[in-house]
Length: 159
Image (cartoon, rainbow, N blue to C red):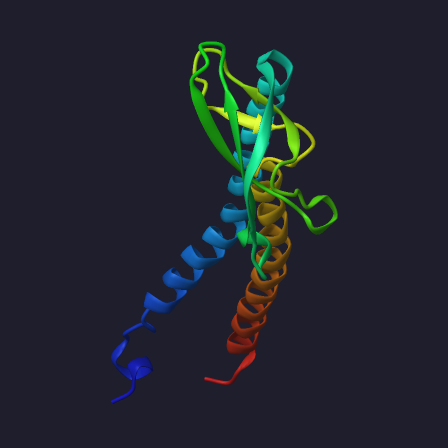
């Protein structure tokens, strides 16, 4: 006996999972954009209100992947306590060990610092958010169109 004959409906497990997946796909990118914007705003605030000191590049990691291109800068706070911060660099702005750079740190938390002239993490997070929004947006629209086309085809099919 078929499902149509015994009155049972088609199971909805796959539809619910697909709906949740599409919803997550549309949400992840904008959330990352928001987090990146928040981090960028905090970095801008630190650049405006923080204490500016000179620091010395002590380590440069030159990885193949952009995520591994980082360098360490050591600096002294107002109390002459040593601190360090790791910063990402792009190919165009590669530092050299021994370079002097300007570090901006929070007077209330000297370990919270950034290096002037180098993008912070907020830009990267926002960029990933934009990329995911575009990719997941296209995939999500394709999934929705496929779903509605299939639904229309099932309605037209003879019983």
